[in-house]
Length: 213
Image (cartoon, rainbow, N blue to C red):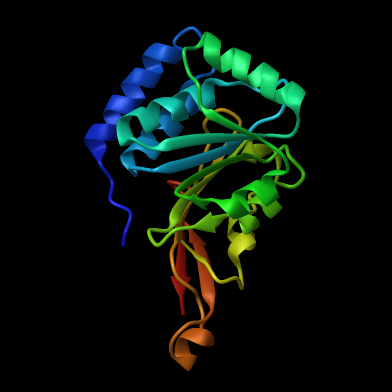
């Protein structure tokens, strides 16, 4: 099953997030991610959060699930983070599900459609690798990606999953976004098993294409 984009739902989520985040500075990231999650009709959206972080992205994701009838889960490292996060979200009129624990352990227990992690976490690569994706594949978003060299492609090189398309967007402090296909690279014929994945980047748009050769 392929991910099917719905521009109508994406537009509604975008506008609702604009209204909810209009008092927050730098909410453009939240609006974009909300529209993406809603447009892909994500049923399980998972994000990570730590104390002191902004909650505008969370507000956008919560709005997205209201349009997709989905589930929004936020993974926090400790009880203090949970209290701070829950209070901030309740103030915004949102009540997402919150899990306390190590993200790379928590994501193993869920089948994720849309994953949002922060590159400022030293273990963000392990979180992405540990995540389970369904038969539709998933969309992975790395926030604050400009703070480090983009690593999304390398997280899947030689693995059982492959990136169909990825793009870096200079929004906020940078977003590295990828559509990860379902299924296994290396299944089927020997030709597929021995194939190589080549990454190409469009210099004008910044969009990255992954081609099997």
